[in-house]
Every structure is written in C-alpha cells, then in structure tokens.
Image (cartoon, rainbow, N blue to C red):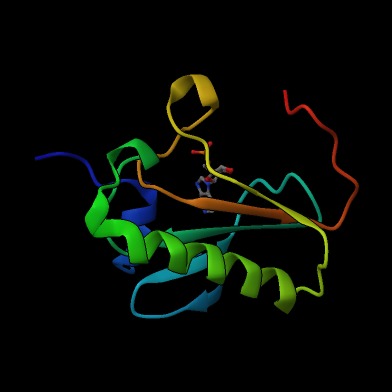
Length: 113
Ligand code: AMP
C-alpha cells in the first residue's frame, strides 16, 4: 500500500493542522515552516500528486483553488501577495499532493531562488 502524504493525513484527520478555511473541495492550513508572516497552503481534498497530473476534469477545482487563495489573502487583509505552485522536484515540490502556497505580509523579491 502506498504511504499517505502528510496532506492526505491532515485531510483524513490523522494529523493536526491549523485550518484557516475549509469547504467540500479543499482546505487551507498554515504552513508549518512559514516563509513570510502569512503562509497558507490551499489543498484540494482530491488527491492529485502534482499540477502536471491535473486533467480537464479538474478545471473547476483548479479555478476554485485560486479563488480560495484570494479569499484567504483577503481574510488576512493582504492586498498584495504571492501564489505559488511548485511542480516537480526541480521546482521545489516536496509533498506529492497538489497545493497552492499563499504567501504575503512582506515585500517579495523576483526572481525566486
Ligand atoms: P512544496 O515544497 O511546494 O511541496 O511545499 C510543501 C509545504 O508543506 C512546505 O512549505 C512545508 O513547510 C509544508 N508542510 C509540510 N508538512 C506540513 C504540515 N504537517 N503542516 C503544514 N505544512 C506542512
């Protein structure tokens, strides 16, 4: 049997998390290792390992995740913020369950490292 990812364990209630938003399609939790004053992860309940695995069937879900990302930013009074999806090892992905980073509360630099 394949080991559940940390996010699947959180979704299944097997690991604690600081949940800031949830609905039937996704949940948003505070990142355990925040890179800015606000660092929230929007995680679909559906298990999609990485963005490259998403299909046409996921069109609405992906749009929903972005709208929730903005909702979370507004909840934290952020007008400016960064949304990041790391896809693959070379992009820095470490958890194989699609997630959207919402990062804000400080000035950001570009390009990212
Ligand atoms: P990525 O590198 O894009 O795959 O992002 C994974 C993120 O998950 C990292 O920013 C981690 O700090 C975060 N993370 C890992 N485990 C947990 C956890 N148990 N609760 C909250 N965030 C986590």
